[in-house]
Structure formats: structure tokens, C-alpha cells
Image (cartoon, rainbow, N blue to C red; front, side, top):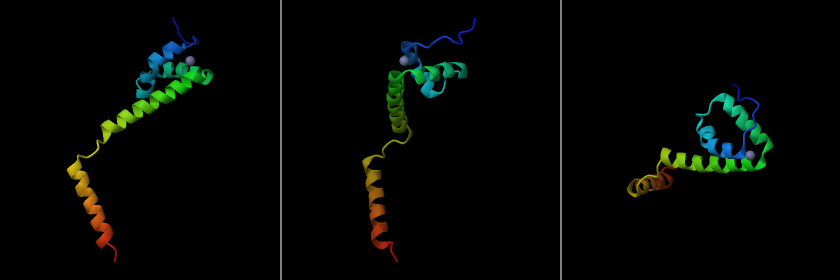
Length: 87
Ligand SMILES: [Zn+2]
């Protein structure tokens, strides 16, 4: 009961792309996935789009933009350093 050697369909790839990008896909499946990518330009483009989407979402979650008061304080500190810091 081996699935090796079976071609991965484009539809299958679209369903698996999240697993692939988040790293939960088993190595054997990764190999098939990447093999299909080598042969299929439209799936490569799709993967690129998904990578961008997931990357942006991850970044937004990772370091949130500071709330306005904090940002203002930081800006103030930077400005003071620039004006009075030079010796
Ligand atoms: Zn494809």
C-alpha cells in the first residue's frame, strides 16, 4: 500500500499548501509536493501567494504595532537623543 510515485494533483496541492507552509506535513508528502511544484508553474505561483499571506499574518501576530501613547513616547525619546546626544 504505497502511495509513492503517485502524481500529486493540483487540487490536492491547494488543499495541502497550508500544511506545507506551516511545517506539519510529513517528509514523504513534502517530497511529492515539491516534485509537483517543479513541474507546475501555476502551483508555484499559488504557493508564493500563500506564503506571502501566511507570512504577513504571522508577522502581525508576532509583534503587534504599539498603541499610540507608547509610539509617541518612543518618537519623543528618539528626537531628544538626536538633538542633545551629539557631543
Ligand atoms: Zn499544479
